Length: 244
Image (cartoon, rainbow, N blue to C red):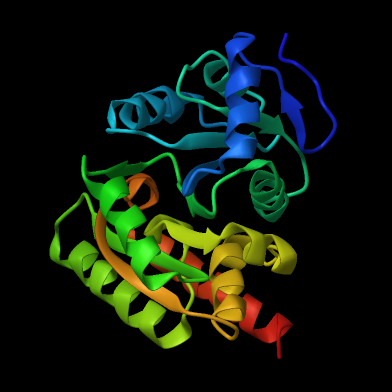
């Protein structure tokens, strides 16, 4: 059976060595933590965690499960790259808020499980953070499907983020942890990360780092480009009317 916890409570991991390492983290906070919200991602999670493990000097990895009904929790619990594992209910914004609170990094990078980073991406991002000291930002999205429509989506993502100062999860948004924790992710559906980015940009610097990330476009592959695009537009209209 999977361990059961209250929302946001830590799941014990593999060995007593973890406790000593986590205590060391609190004494010397890392520059960057990776925050991975998941729900029913058993099919993709093993490959994603193996990808993180292969990255040079992979930082703290915090996985927050949204009460999955498959083997997501078991996979995360047994993988060596996972530093902290939590389970909670209430939507992705709740997962992200608990992940922020459980992380130790000065900045937190949010990742979906279909993201893939280059071997130099984390080092480049950390250098960028030290120089620009942003309150929020994102990486540069590259769809793994290089068809013209998907390349157009990459361009549009950059334009939209320049205009709105907010980034969606598939752009790998990052946040200054303490500033983001004070503001909090809000219950605005898929706009939780972009909403927080826009709010933080009012008090500090928002940057689009020229650090590439590949995303799989799996929703487009499953449901078709135009069907997914129309669904996103419906969500945007609903979000717009709710916030008038």
